[in-house]
Length: 156
Ligand SMILES: *[C@@H]1O[C@H](CO)[C@@H](O)[C@H](O)[C@H]1NC(C)=O
Image: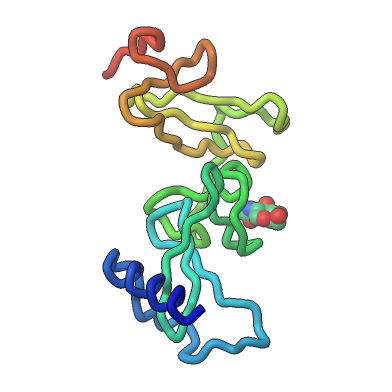
């Protein structure tokens, strides 16, 4: 156990992901649930406090940090916008999104200028920007990230 903790700490230190954080209590209280904080820039990461340091953790693939429920959540529910601290973001309802949210019929909106990006409409009618895996373009006909030849998106 000691060895595991030590190795984990070393890996974390090497990657530079352990930082002193004022929001973290100096001493962990084993009686209390761990203190969890949103990551300042990445939606799929969060911070957990360990001895006054904020340690970066990653959500399972495809999930985003929901700071209201303090857990990894579906991106549509987590309302996270990369680069913006999730809790301080103001959201604008988009005219491209339907009034009624139906999780079985997600609505996707192509990006105005970038073929490699698209939006999903979240339950509140807000467009959340998403990025296709590298080299793929958003294909609005089939609603997924596709090979550029098939997506036929014209970069503006
Ligand atoms: C976070 O999770 C809670 C509880 O599951 C949910 O009600 C809420 O809509 C989610 N998103 C935000 C931005 O709070």
